[in-house]
Length: 103
Image 1 (cartoon, one colour):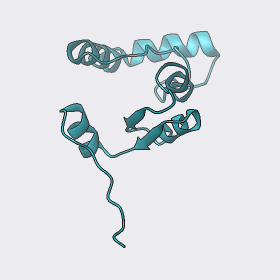
Image 2: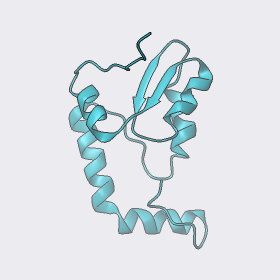
Image 3: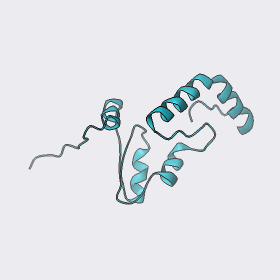
Image 4: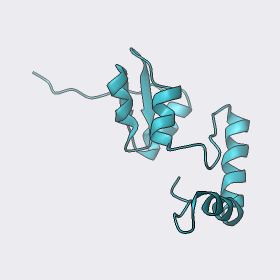
């Protein structure tokens, strides 16, 4: 989580981040609840590893907005990092595709 600054030690830094960024975390938590998405609270771990351990599986398709999304490809899934507009399309249930060269 980029909102947790490593300054005084894990416990104190987490407490500071939760206090200073409460509005952000509350918004993310409420939006996730409203739209049926998962939300990993601050201090849950490094999100790149959480994705691998909880969401990646062989043969799956993952579309994410994080540059580390392709790491899930190491577990045999197609995992693609996309921009915000593509992510909104996917979340709205619109089809997503990849262009390929002609020839």
